[in-house]
Image (cartoon, rainbow, N blue to C red; front, side, top):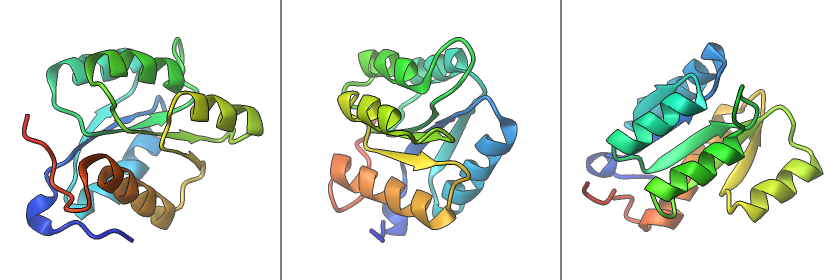
Length: 139
């Protein structure tokens, strides 16, 4: 696992999922590590958060009403260029993996999520995007 120094854990992670239990599970995994979490029960609310808050990583449910996680990511990247994203889905099919790869998604995590997989994937995505030091760019 890539360790982030405590003084460097100033990243904001958006968790967008229409299921409250999924949002809370992901929050319960990443928040104790020192990450700031912002929760969105819909893609529309997620876009509002992205427009008004500095976000460093997005954990997106693939299947949400009115807009998929991939569609949300496309809109989000119009606001935050190069925003790293991880899809979370119960449908980790080959088709979904290909769509995620085309959308430059960092990774796809299958539901139900594994705590260790989420921690590993989130820390690796942040390290890849922001450098091994783990320091977030100032907003």
